Length: 346
Length: 219
Image (cartoon, helix red, strand yellow):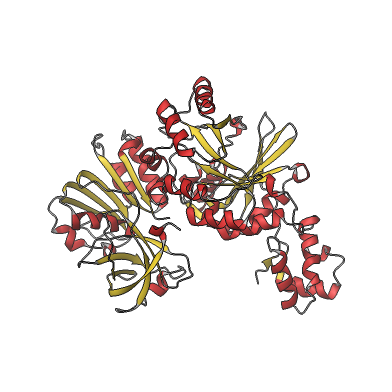
């Protein structure tokens, strides 16, 4: 019998499990402590739970932690970890140390359905949703877990296409019973799936990042097919109608493509579109992927674009490029592993 | 709330099974729509809607939707059970995928043919090449209708059957074997992520500018 994983369950789910096994609800709290505050891999290690109770838990449940199967390290210190998931798939998590902070970029799906033109993950299609446990495992099983300061959901997959598991994982990461990270240290990124975005804004206090990439809808539709279903204009309308308060941050991601989205018309339209939103724009260098028709912008062009947006009153930064020598662009490593597996099966 | 995404009660006008897994459902629909639009469909008020391309209209104030029943699907096992006269929920039409009706290539797989039917039923079409990827000849939805459209050059790519009449293999195999493509033509792709990503890459590798490729993914 395949045992169900406890890792990734919320406190309320753990209490329900305890009760369903005829145990007191506080055993759920004890399990949460062991799962998220300590570092265990078997139910047997839950030493403050009675042997009889542990045996009952062990009959139906396992811990469900998974170690990484591969790691690549960049000369700049960035590390890309490959984690196996159910059904022999792979996901990537990128650890990015930088002065006084250390960020982990986590995946929310195996593959992706969105098919963005510039994305390597999309080339492997959609393989599976990650469970909340598989998302939180990327953090807790990271060798550098104790050094982490920030989590960004910018790895493989579209988080709001897996909204229930993403919200559960966010709860575990930010709750006192869980990893107890501040909501101000967690950012979830989306290409603009409106129903999921609304649910996230209402049910979480974490930061939001939106992949924008061009303010013009016809261009965006060619880079990002989602534009046909959830147009940027409607995404912005939703964001403008939401009160972000003083602490919560909204940012827009903008990968710069040479000759595509780097003109003064783009600057003007960005200013019009983002008018009234207290936000930051992050300009991102394009990491070229195989067979792409797109090219990245020069450093000079990126600085010019940043300065033009800044003059329009939009806080704009150029994100430092990290891990280029290990293809930190998400999807490359796992796609390679997937193709290797497929070849072995043929 | 965005009124386009609100869901309204509507009545099922009819439902028919057109292949082993595919159904055509007709629902009353009082709103004006354009070919390429989608609508949100659900059976219960408090469940999330699933999006379907409008597959044309057989009667005034009605639309037709094409779906396949997925055993583990959230909606389709129940949707295939509805009867004429039942109430379901639908949203107003929305979307921005606008397949060209002149000198264009339409490339789709499975139920991705739906928005193109919306075009040929509502607009005059001219010099259209339609590639439809399906598993078996049973899945060549609207085959007779398409054959009566003289301006549509239709090729079905059957991945699991060698019918002798159709191309045997996936769309990508058909396209890869083709030497030349008109670079000034627009290509409209609708269907699964895998098909769209592979076909888009293939067209780009054959010299088609990505700005001539329009896509609608069934998310």
